[in-house]
Length: 165
Image (cartoon, rainbow, N blue to C red):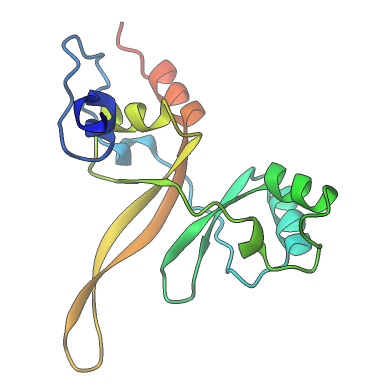
């Protein structure tokens, strides 16, 4: 039934926006949100250190990225704290034990309309930018870099500050 759900089709890139009466911001690109650089955690960071870093820096969540650049998932302060308090993980365990591995990605060139559809079901999306990289023998490959994390509050703030009506 997913293939007949327009929101699922838009979120997964199979359909462009199908909304008939689009708001003024619908086709603006995600890059216009002016997101701040994300805080990124490596998978071996302990849960205790992750909690300390997130609290100190004032973040609710952070992407977990391997040294290779592979995006492994997202860790949230509330899930980490509740997992430790419930005894499901120890403070010394690596943050990978509490990392959500299901998350949505969106590109800088994607529209705020597509982002809006994603945020109807997800609390956040990881904003990625594809970069071509070359290795020592001259062969190239595309690598996704984490550009930011975007929430519904970021979208709402942008729309309310720039409201054209």
